[in-house]
Image: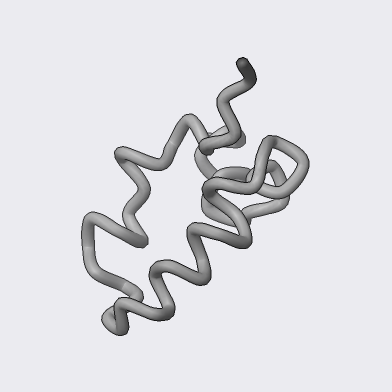
Length: 53
């Protein structure tokens, strides 16, 4: 079974530093990017930055 979660999910600053303070925003962001498979999370600017540095 394929893992659809971003490999950076557990260490992502957006969640660790509470960038998205509203719980609805967090859930929406995770649904759109973090849990939507590589095709989606690979377009996340935070993910792309972490891969580049």
